[in-house]
Picture 1 (tube, rainbow, N blue to C red):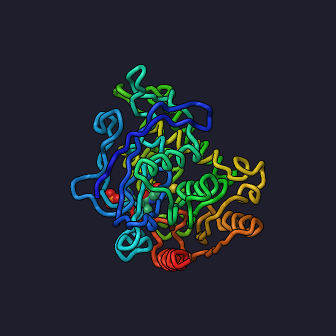
Picture 2: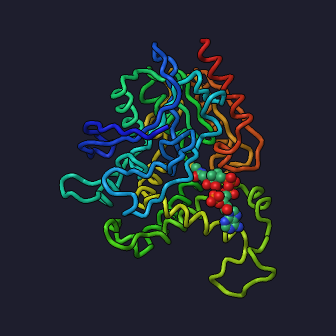
Picture 3: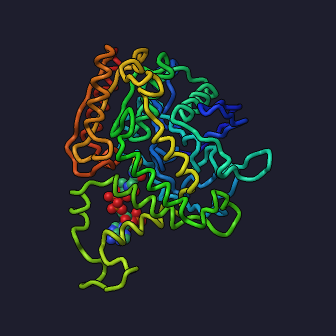
Length: 386
Ligand code: COA
Protein backbone atom coordinates (compact mmCIF):
# COMPACT_ATOMS: atom_id res chain seq x y z
CA UNK A 1 0.00 0.00 0.00
CA UNK A 2 1.06 3.51 -0.66
CA UNK A 3 -0.51 6.90 -0.12
CA UNK A 4 -1.57 8.79 -3.24
CA UNK A 5 -2.57 12.41 -3.66
CA UNK A 6 -5.14 14.07 -5.89
CA UNK A 7 -5.13 17.81 -6.55
CA UNK A 8 -8.71 18.87 -7.12
CA UNK A 9 -10.37 22.11 -8.21
CA UNK A 10 -12.15 24.67 -6.02
CA UNK A 11 -14.56 23.44 -3.39
CA UNK A 12 -17.45 25.60 -2.20
CA UNK A 13 -17.99 25.06 1.52
CA UNK A 14 -21.15 25.05 3.60
CA UNK A 15 -19.95 28.15 5.43
CA UNK A 16 -20.17 30.09 2.16
CA UNK A 17 -16.39 30.25 1.81
CA UNK A 18 -14.43 28.56 -0.98
CA UNK A 19 -11.15 26.70 -1.01
CA UNK A 20 -9.58 27.52 -4.37
CA UNK A 21 -7.99 24.10 -4.69
CA UNK A 22 -7.73 21.08 -2.45
CA UNK A 23 -5.43 18.12 -2.12
CA UNK A 24 -6.85 14.80 -0.94
CA UNK A 25 -4.62 11.96 0.25
CA UNK A 26 -6.01 8.48 -0.32
CA UNK A 27 -5.14 4.81 -0.35
CA UNK A 28 -6.77 1.95 -2.20
CA UNK A 29 -6.89 -1.76 -1.42
CA UNK A 30 -8.08 -4.61 -3.65
CA UNK A 31 -8.88 -4.54 -7.36
CA UNK A 32 -11.56 -2.44 -8.98
CA UNK A 33 -14.00 -4.61 -10.92
CA UNK A 34 -14.57 -4.00 -14.62
CA UNK A 35 -18.14 -2.83 -13.92
CA UNK A 36 -17.08 -0.70 -10.94
CA UNK A 37 -19.66 -2.49 -8.81
CA UNK A 38 -17.33 -3.38 -5.93
CA UNK A 39 -16.17 -0.01 -4.61
CA UNK A 40 -16.31 0.52 -0.85
CA UNK A 41 -15.39 3.85 0.73
CA UNK A 42 -14.25 3.60 4.34
CA UNK A 43 -14.17 6.81 6.34
CA UNK A 44 -11.90 7.51 9.28
CA UNK A 45 -12.57 9.12 12.63
CA UNK A 46 -11.13 12.31 14.15
CA UNK A 47 -7.44 11.49 14.16
CA UNK A 48 -7.23 8.80 11.47
CA UNK A 49 -5.78 8.98 8.00
CA UNK A 50 -5.93 7.36 4.58
CA UNK A 51 -3.93 4.38 5.80
CA UNK A 52 -6.88 2.11 6.65
CA UNK A 53 -5.14 -1.22 6.20
CA UNK A 54 -1.85 -2.92 5.67
CA UNK A 55 1.45 -2.21 7.27
CA UNK A 56 4.00 0.33 6.15
CA UNK A 57 7.45 -1.15 6.29
CA UNK A 58 9.29 2.10 5.76
CA UNK A 59 7.47 4.46 8.10
CA UNK A 60 4.00 6.02 7.98
CA UNK A 61 2.33 8.53 5.71
CA UNK A 62 4.32 11.49 6.92
CA UNK A 63 4.11 13.54 3.77
CA UNK A 64 1.85 16.49 4.43
CA UNK A 65 0.50 19.08 2.10
CA UNK A 66 2.35 22.36 2.12
CA UNK A 67 4.68 22.18 5.05
CA UNK A 68 7.25 19.54 5.90
CA UNK A 69 6.28 16.91 8.41
CA UNK A 70 9.52 17.18 10.29
CA UNK A 71 9.24 20.92 10.49
CA UNK A 72 5.91 20.44 12.25
CA UNK A 73 7.25 17.74 14.52
CA UNK A 74 5.09 15.01 12.98
CA UNK A 75 6.81 11.67 13.22
CA UNK A 76 5.91 8.60 11.23
CA UNK A 77 3.17 6.40 12.60
CA UNK A 78 3.65 2.84 13.74
CA UNK A 79 2.48 1.92 10.27
CA UNK A 80 -0.46 -0.41 10.88
CA UNK A 81 -3.70 0.70 9.20
CA UNK A 82 -6.38 1.95 11.60
CA UNK A 83 -8.96 -0.56 10.30
CA UNK A 84 -6.49 -3.34 9.58
CA UNK A 85 -8.69 -5.61 11.70
CA UNK A 86 -11.53 -5.24 9.21
CA UNK A 87 -9.97 -4.39 5.83
CA UNK A 88 -7.90 -6.99 3.99
CA UNK A 89 -8.04 -10.36 2.25
CA UNK A 90 -10.75 -12.52 3.85
CA UNK A 91 -11.66 -9.78 6.35
CA UNK A 92 -14.97 -7.92 6.83
CA UNK A 93 -14.19 -5.65 3.89
CA UNK A 94 -12.65 -8.44 1.88
CA UNK A 95 -10.09 -6.95 -0.48
CA UNK A 96 -10.20 -10.13 -2.57
CA UNK A 97 -13.73 -9.00 -3.49
CA UNK A 98 -13.98 -5.29 -2.89
CA UNK A 99 -12.02 -2.28 -4.01
CA UNK A 100 -11.65 -0.30 -0.79
CA UNK A 101 -10.81 3.41 -0.84
CA UNK A 102 -9.94 5.51 2.18
CA UNK A 103 -9.31 9.25 2.01
CA UNK A 104 -7.79 11.54 4.59
CA UNK A 105 -10.54 14.01 5.46
CA UNK A 106 -10.51 17.67 4.49
CA UNK A 107 -9.15 19.72 7.41
CA UNK A 108 -6.82 16.99 8.61
CA UNK A 109 -3.03 17.13 8.70
CA UNK A 110 -2.32 13.67 7.34
CA UNK A 111 -1.88 14.55 3.69
CA UNK A 112 -5.11 16.35 2.74
CA UNK A 113 -5.62 20.10 2.73
CA UNK A 114 -6.02 21.53 6.21
CA UNK A 115 -4.99 24.47 8.37
CA UNK A 116 -1.30 23.52 8.14
CA UNK A 117 -1.41 23.67 4.33
CA UNK A 118 0.00 26.68 2.57
CA UNK A 119 -2.57 29.33 1.71
CA UNK A 120 -1.39 30.25 -1.82
CA UNK A 121 -2.17 33.99 -1.61
CA UNK A 122 0.08 34.97 1.31
CA UNK A 123 2.25 31.88 0.76
CA UNK A 124 2.15 30.70 4.37
CA UNK A 125 0.06 28.13 6.27
CA UNK A 126 -3.62 28.98 6.71
CA UNK A 127 -3.62 28.47 10.46
CA UNK A 128 -6.77 30.10 11.88
CA UNK A 129 -7.58 31.60 8.44
CA UNK A 130 -8.54 28.14 7.23
CA UNK A 131 -12.30 28.12 6.66
CA UNK A 132 -14.50 26.11 9.02
CA UNK A 133 -15.26 22.76 7.40
CA UNK A 134 -18.20 20.45 8.03
CA UNK A 135 -18.86 16.74 7.57
CA UNK A 136 -20.80 17.78 4.44
CA UNK A 137 -17.66 19.48 3.09
CA UNK A 138 -15.56 16.40 3.87
CA UNK A 139 -18.03 14.26 1.93
CA UNK A 140 -18.14 16.61 -1.05
CA UNK A 141 -14.34 16.51 -1.13
CA UNK A 142 -14.55 12.70 -1.21
CA UNK A 143 -17.12 12.94 -4.01
CA UNK A 144 -14.72 15.18 -5.95
CA UNK A 145 -11.98 12.60 -5.52
CA UNK A 146 -14.23 9.77 -6.75
CA UNK A 147 -15.22 11.88 -9.78
CA UNK A 148 -11.51 12.40 -10.42
CA UNK A 149 -11.02 8.61 -10.28
CA UNK A 150 -14.03 8.03 -12.55
CA UNK A 151 -16.11 6.28 -9.89
CA UNK A 152 -19.87 7.02 -9.96
CA UNK A 153 -21.30 4.60 -7.43
CA UNK A 154 -20.37 3.04 -4.14
CA UNK A 155 -21.37 -0.46 -3.24
CA UNK A 156 -20.92 0.71 0.32
CA UNK A 157 -19.74 3.58 2.44
CA UNK A 158 -18.71 2.71 5.96
CA UNK A 159 -17.14 4.25 9.01
CA UNK A 160 -16.90 4.41 12.76
CA UNK A 161 -17.51 7.48 14.93
CA UNK A 162 -16.93 10.59 12.76
CA UNK A 163 -16.45 8.12 9.88
CA UNK A 164 -20.00 6.88 10.38
CA UNK A 165 -21.25 10.47 10.23
CA UNK A 166 -19.57 10.79 6.83
CA UNK A 167 -21.24 7.55 5.71
CA UNK A 168 -24.66 8.84 6.79
CA UNK A 169 -24.01 12.19 5.11
CA UNK A 170 -23.11 10.37 1.88
CA UNK A 171 -26.41 8.47 1.90
CA UNK A 172 -28.34 11.73 2.33
CA UNK A 173 -26.37 14.01 0.00
CA UNK A 174 -25.76 11.51 -2.80
CA UNK A 175 -28.67 9.07 -2.44
CA UNK A 176 -28.28 7.64 -5.93
CA UNK A 177 -24.60 6.88 -5.46
CA UNK A 178 -24.76 4.68 -2.36
CA UNK A 179 -26.12 1.12 -2.16
CA UNK A 180 -25.14 0.29 1.43
CA UNK A 181 -24.34 2.41 4.41
CA UNK A 182 -22.54 1.00 7.45
CA UNK A 183 -22.29 2.97 10.68
CA UNK A 184 -20.42 1.55 13.61
CA UNK A 185 -20.18 3.37 16.96
CA UNK A 186 -21.73 6.41 15.32
CA UNK A 187 -24.71 8.71 15.42
CA UNK A 188 -26.89 11.16 13.49
CA UNK A 189 -25.82 13.85 15.99
CA UNK A 190 -23.37 13.75 18.87
CA UNK A 191 -25.07 14.02 22.27
CA UNK A 192 -24.72 17.09 24.45
CA UNK A 193 -22.19 15.40 26.74
CA UNK A 194 -20.00 14.73 23.69
CA UNK A 195 -20.40 18.32 22.51
CA UNK A 196 -19.36 19.50 25.97
CA UNK A 197 -16.28 17.28 26.13
CA UNK A 198 -15.20 18.38 22.66
CA UNK A 199 -15.50 21.98 23.83
CA UNK A 200 -13.22 21.22 26.80
CA UNK A 201 -10.66 19.56 24.51
CA UNK A 202 -10.62 22.55 22.16
CA UNK A 203 -10.35 24.93 25.11
CA UNK A 204 -7.27 23.06 26.33
CA UNK A 205 -5.54 23.73 22.99
CA UNK A 206 -6.56 27.36 22.78
CA UNK A 207 -5.56 28.01 26.42
CA UNK A 208 -2.01 26.86 25.69
CA UNK A 209 0.08 30.04 25.16
CA UNK A 210 2.07 28.13 22.54
CA UNK A 211 -1.07 27.97 20.40
CA UNK A 212 -0.45 31.66 19.63
CA UNK A 213 -3.90 32.26 18.22
CA UNK A 214 -3.31 29.37 15.81
CA UNK A 215 -0.26 31.01 14.17
CA UNK A 216 2.41 28.74 15.60
CA UNK A 217 3.73 27.30 12.32
CA UNK A 218 7.29 28.28 11.68
CA UNK A 219 7.81 29.40 15.27
CA UNK A 220 9.73 27.15 17.60
CA UNK A 221 6.69 26.70 19.84
CA UNK A 222 3.56 24.63 19.23
CA UNK A 223 0.75 23.75 21.63
CA UNK A 224 1.92 20.25 22.56
CA UNK A 225 0.65 20.60 26.13
CA UNK A 226 -2.79 21.74 24.98
CA UNK A 227 -3.26 19.04 22.36
CA UNK A 228 -1.94 16.52 24.89
CA UNK A 229 -4.70 17.43 27.35
CA UNK A 230 -7.24 17.35 24.51
CA UNK A 231 -6.08 13.83 23.66
CA UNK A 232 -6.25 12.72 27.29
CA UNK A 233 -9.87 13.88 27.49
CA UNK A 234 -10.67 12.25 24.18
CA UNK A 235 -8.89 9.06 25.12
CA UNK A 236 -10.93 8.67 28.31
CA UNK A 237 -14.09 8.96 26.23
CA UNK A 238 -12.82 6.21 23.91
CA UNK A 239 -12.45 3.75 26.77
CA UNK A 240 -15.03 2.44 29.23
CA UNK A 241 -15.00 2.50 33.01
CA UNK A 242 -14.59 -1.28 32.95
CA UNK A 243 -11.73 -1.27 30.44
CA UNK A 244 -9.87 1.41 32.42
CA UNK A 245 -10.38 -0.61 35.59
CA UNK A 246 -9.27 -3.84 33.91
CA UNK A 247 -6.23 -2.27 32.26
CA UNK A 248 -4.92 -0.25 35.20
CA UNK A 249 -6.94 -0.86 38.34
CA UNK A 250 -5.49 1.68 40.84
CA UNK A 251 -2.01 0.36 40.13
CA UNK A 252 0.95 2.65 40.78
CA UNK A 253 3.50 3.20 38.02
CA UNK A 254 6.99 1.88 38.80
CA UNK A 255 6.65 2.43 42.55
CA UNK A 256 5.20 0.86 45.69
CA UNK A 257 3.91 3.98 47.35
CA UNK A 258 2.81 7.51 46.45
CA UNK A 259 5.56 9.98 45.53
CA UNK A 260 3.85 12.79 47.44
CA UNK A 261 4.83 15.06 44.55
CA UNK A 262 2.11 16.97 42.69
CA UNK A 263 3.58 16.68 39.21
CA UNK A 264 4.65 13.01 39.40
CA UNK A 265 2.44 10.56 37.45
CA UNK A 266 1.98 8.12 40.32
CA UNK A 267 -0.80 6.01 38.85
CA UNK A 268 -0.31 3.73 35.85
CA UNK A 269 -3.36 5.31 34.22
CA UNK A 270 -1.78 8.77 34.56
CA UNK A 271 1.43 7.59 32.99
CA UNK A 272 -0.56 5.90 30.20
CA UNK A 273 -2.50 9.08 29.43
CA UNK A 274 0.68 11.13 29.42
CA UNK A 275 2.24 8.65 27.02
CA UNK A 276 -0.78 8.84 24.72
CA UNK A 277 -0.72 12.64 24.96
CA UNK A 278 2.94 12.85 23.95
CA UNK A 279 2.50 10.37 21.12
CA UNK A 280 -0.49 12.28 19.78
CA UNK A 281 1.21 15.68 19.99
CA UNK A 282 3.98 14.17 17.89
CA UNK A 283 1.71 13.13 15.07
CA UNK A 284 -1.26 15.46 14.96
CA UNK A 285 -1.62 19.14 14.23
CA UNK A 286 -3.46 21.09 16.94
CA UNK A 287 -5.32 23.34 14.49
CA UNK A 288 -6.56 20.29 12.58
CA UNK A 289 -7.84 18.93 15.88
CA UNK A 290 -9.77 22.16 16.47
CA UNK A 291 -11.34 22.16 13.00
CA UNK A 292 -12.26 18.48 12.96
CA UNK A 293 -13.64 18.57 16.49
CA UNK A 294 -15.79 21.52 15.40
CA UNK A 295 -17.07 19.59 12.36
CA UNK A 296 -17.91 16.64 14.61
CA UNK A 297 -20.08 18.80 16.86
CA UNK A 298 -21.78 20.60 13.95
CA UNK A 299 -22.92 17.33 12.40
CA UNK A 300 -26.65 16.99 12.91
CA UNK A 301 -28.45 15.14 10.12
CA UNK A 302 -31.91 16.24 11.31
CA UNK A 303 -31.02 19.93 11.65
CA UNK A 304 -28.88 20.11 8.52
CA UNK A 305 -31.12 18.13 6.18
CA UNK A 306 -34.58 17.77 7.68
CA UNK A 307 -35.51 21.06 9.31
CA UNK A 308 -35.12 19.34 12.67
CA UNK A 309 -36.76 16.03 11.67
CA UNK A 310 -34.47 13.04 11.24
CA UNK A 311 -37.18 11.13 9.40
CA UNK A 312 -37.54 13.97 6.90
CA UNK A 313 -33.74 14.19 6.53
CA UNK A 314 -33.71 10.53 5.50
CA UNK A 315 -36.69 10.64 3.15
CA UNK A 316 -34.66 10.56 -0.10
CA UNK A 317 -32.12 7.98 1.10
CA UNK A 318 -31.88 4.87 -1.11
CA UNK A 319 -29.19 2.89 0.69
CA UNK A 320 -29.83 0.01 3.03
CA UNK A 321 -28.27 0.41 6.43
CA UNK A 322 -26.27 -1.64 8.88
CA UNK A 323 -25.97 -0.04 12.32
CA UNK A 324 -23.57 -1.47 14.90
CA UNK A 325 -23.12 -0.24 18.45
CA UNK A 326 -21.32 -1.47 21.56
CA UNK A 327 -22.62 -2.02 25.07
CA UNK A 328 -19.74 -0.16 26.74
CA UNK A 329 -19.64 2.84 24.36
CA UNK A 330 -21.04 5.67 26.45
CA UNK A 331 -20.11 8.52 24.13
CA UNK A 332 -21.83 7.08 21.01
CA UNK A 333 -24.35 4.90 22.84
CA UNK A 334 -26.74 2.29 21.48
CA UNK A 335 -29.60 4.75 22.14
CA UNK A 336 -28.22 6.87 19.27
CA UNK A 337 -28.25 3.86 16.92
CA UNK A 338 -31.82 3.07 17.98
CA UNK A 339 -32.88 6.66 17.28
CA UNK A 340 -31.42 6.43 13.78
CA UNK A 341 -32.95 2.99 13.20
CA UNK A 342 -36.38 4.26 14.28
CA UNK A 343 -36.16 7.25 11.93
CA UNK A 344 -34.98 5.06 9.03
CA UNK A 345 -37.87 2.65 9.57
CA UNK A 346 -40.36 5.51 9.83
CA UNK A 347 -39.01 6.81 6.51
CA UNK A 348 -39.57 3.34 5.01
CA UNK A 349 -35.90 2.39 4.61
CA UNK A 350 -34.17 -0.97 4.99
CA UNK A 351 -32.15 -1.16 8.18
CA UNK A 352 -30.48 -3.83 10.27
CA UNK A 353 -29.10 -3.03 13.73
CA UNK A 354 -26.98 -5.01 16.18
CA UNK A 355 -25.56 -4.21 19.58
CA UNK A 356 -22.28 -5.98 20.34
CA UNK A 357 -21.28 -6.89 23.88
CA UNK A 358 -17.77 -5.58 24.63
CA UNK A 359 -15.85 -3.76 27.34
CA UNK A 360 -13.65 -1.75 24.93
CA UNK A 361 -15.92 1.32 24.96
CA UNK A 362 -15.98 3.57 21.90
CA UNK A 363 -12.69 2.07 20.65
CA UNK A 364 -14.64 -1.16 20.04
CA UNK A 365 -15.15 -0.11 16.43
CA UNK A 366 -11.37 -0.39 16.03
CA UNK A 367 -10.66 -3.33 18.32
CA UNK A 368 -13.67 -5.69 18.18
CA UNK A 369 -13.32 -7.74 15.03
CA UNK A 370 -15.15 -11.06 15.39
CA UNK A 371 -18.76 -9.90 15.49
CA UNK A 372 -18.24 -6.78 13.38
CA UNK A 373 -16.69 -9.01 10.72
CA UNK A 374 -19.61 -11.43 10.79
CA UNK A 375 -22.29 -8.74 10.53
CA UNK A 376 -20.49 -6.69 7.88
CA UNK A 377 -19.59 -9.69 5.70
CA UNK A 378 -23.14 -11.04 5.77
CA UNK A 379 -24.66 -7.61 5.15
CA UNK A 380 -22.42 -6.90 2.16
CA UNK A 381 -22.88 -10.38 0.69
CA UNK A 382 -26.68 -10.11 0.99
CA UNK A 383 -26.72 -6.62 -0.45
CA UNK A 384 -24.51 -7.57 -3.36
CA UNK A 385 -26.78 -10.51 -4.11
CA UNK A 386 -29.64 -7.99 -4.26
N1 COA B 1 2.48 4.09 31.03
C1 COA B 1 2.97 4.50 29.83
N2 COA B 1 2.67 3.89 28.66
C2 COA B 1 1.84 2.83 28.71
C3 COA B 1 1.30 2.36 29.91
C4 COA B 1 1.65 3.03 31.12
N3 COA B 1 1.18 2.67 32.30
N4 COA B 1 0.52 1.29 29.64
C5 COA B 1 0.55 1.10 28.29
N5 COA B 1 1.35 2.02 27.74
C6 COA B 1 1.67 2.17 26.34
C7 COA B 1 2.23 0.87 25.77
O1 COA B 1 3.61 0.80 25.98
C8 COA B 1 1.84 0.97 24.30
O2 COA B 1 2.79 1.77 23.65
P1 COA B 1 3.02 1.63 22.03
O3 COA B 1 1.71 1.99 21.37
O4 COA B 1 4.10 2.61 21.73
O5 COA B 1 3.41 0.21 21.79
C9 COA B 1 0.52 1.71 24.34
O6 COA B 1 0.45 2.38 25.62
C10 COA B 1 -0.64 0.73 24.23
O7 COA B 1 -1.83 1.43 24.24
P2 COA B 1 -3.19 0.66 24.48
O8 COA B 1 -4.28 1.67 24.46
O9 COA B 1 -3.09 -0.19 25.71
O10 COA B 1 -3.25 -0.29 23.21
P3 COA B 1 -4.48 -1.13 22.72
O11 COA B 1 -3.90 -2.17 21.80
O12 COA B 1 -5.37 -1.57 23.82
O13 COA B 1 -5.32 -0.08 21.86
C11 COA B 1 -5.55 1.65 20.29
C12 COA B 1 -4.84 0.37 20.66
C13 COA B 1 -4.93 2.12 18.97
C14 COA B 1 -7.05 1.41 20.05
C15 COA B 1 -5.39 2.71 21.39
O14 COA B 1 -4.07 2.78 21.80
C16 COA B 1 -5.74 4.08 20.94
O15 COA B 1 -4.91 4.83 20.45
N6 COA B 1 -7.03 4.45 21.09
C17 COA B 1 -7.51 5.67 20.58
C18 COA B 1 -7.85 5.47 19.15
C19 COA B 1 -8.77 6.52 18.71
O16 COA B 1 -8.35 7.55 18.24
N7 COA B 1 -10.04 6.24 18.92
C20 COA B 1 -11.06 7.20 18.76
C21 COA B 1 -11.63 7.30 17.51
S1 COA B 1 -12.86 8.55 17.54
